[in-house]
Amino acid sequence: MKNNVNPLFFYLLIMAVTMLTLACSPSGANDSKQSGSFTNKSWKLYSLSVAPAIDWDLDGKKETDILATMEGCEKDDLLLLRNDSTIVRNAGKLKCDEDDEQEKHTGSWTYDKASKKLTLNEDNDAQVLTVVESSGSRLVVTYNWKATNGTSHQMTAIYN
Image (tube, rainbow, N blue to C red; front, side, top):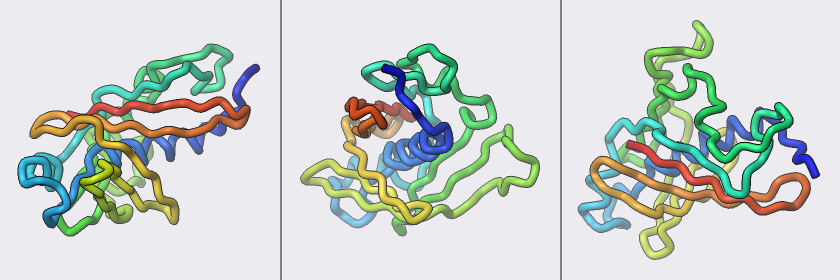
């Protein structure tokens, strides 16, 4: 059964996963090592995958490597989770549209150390991510969602 996936939904989902991947607690909700390694740092998406495979780009083929289906102008975007709990997105060197702002404040984030849940609040929507791994040079987050056909999927984003 083919998943009917709205490409805009997935683009927004990718953006949310990116934000979640970079989030951490600025004011002691994390231990000091984790907090120092996630905040006030520009993160670039290194890998974005989904399991089980889906027809992400609606070309009739199921994929697990979502990053490979993204445009170059999306792949170089940067995510910054500031200590003041704001989210800043940077368009990177390649803008998808000339009129896009280079840097844009897009919302806020929170992190719950006990549950390892990172919540990104952007565009009047909250995305809850699970922080799987965090260090000064690598951030791994997961996001669970259901496709329109009811199949559960897990997205994994790796930032460095």
